[in-house]
Length: 108
Image 1 (tube, helix red, strand yellow):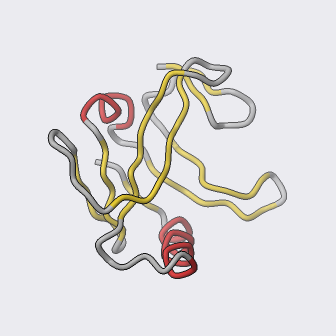
Image 2 (cartoon, rainbow, N blue to C red):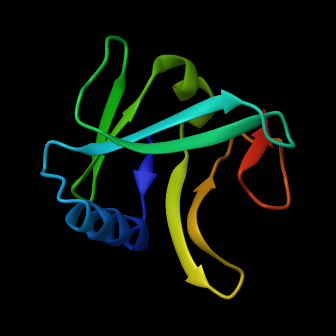
């Protein structure tokens, strides 16, 4: 499962409202090769479930994850920070053995 913190859920809802996206849209979370640690996170809005997707809902946010990405993301928490140490979405991934300084890439 992928969980969403209260702050992340609030921010996702705010962005969906700003972009006039209806409730059929959720977050597509993915992992791609790249970044300084080897793998990087992807985050986008989507309203279609693809074959093989894992679908979760937490705090009113639907989350789509393809099966390949889910192998790296199982148990991950999506958080949002608006503090002095950086504003944006952050992944708390128990499967990451190493992360880069910016927090946008990892290795498993």
